[in-house]
Length: 397
Image: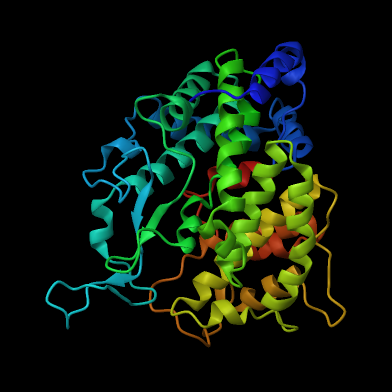
């Protein structure tokens, strides 16, 4: 991609700063001081050493693994450019009353398996997850093989001329027979802020080049512009439910990464009102309870809020302890869910597919730290699956 004058200047400045970058990592979803302390404790703490060893085993499986790009799909996006991301609306199915099935109709909570024939969303999710694991494995072990693979994957998806993804979601979650991409498709990149943390972790590696840094700043700057100015981006910002929360989480983190603090300030300022309309006094999230996967989506939206609260901390905003005048808060939203997930209380709303308890596990560990209350950690232990939470446990030691 062509670099703008802004990032040529940035590249020059980075040359002067490269020597000190390794001294302080910049993270958005985690506390840099806390993870640095964990790394330091690993020298003498057997339990932490064991978790790092487990993480290394997971990362070892990724080092030689092949990943796909947006160029691997066998269907052209509506614009005709394979570099453009493409996915189909998760819950849309052919209309049996129409000869060609079009326009598709919505069946909330029921994923159409035919959507998997287009590989962009899975390839992107797999790559982000791999870069996340590899970058953390590099941070805790200083093994260059993990950094090498992580950087290779970042270049592969975002920077390499042959395989890069264009910085937009014009054709995300296409509703067949209805549109060529929809605002709700922006949820497809809800894990993208993990990439920002990965970049921070990779700064200390000689493998991470200044051209990588400036190239990624440019990509995210372009994507941020699309999020803020495209019709789909503007519409998603107005979404009342989890879509709006995840949109704000993405924009706030990317804006901070790109040095646009005013954009992050504006987003976070409006989120006090967002919390007030999403969470009831008793902790219920009515916009998520209306779904056919009400428990899953209530947890999903709370995940967005926990990430957003972590990002907001970097900007001096405290959502963890914020409470509206009538008592609405993130803590109450969490407390409302605990009896149904941890204690076996029968769920009172629709949940047509199996709920994944581990989705709440991480939130409970974070709550224990943020709210200074070990009862959340004890509740987390009741639903722990040690095979799925190696990195979660390590980062929340």
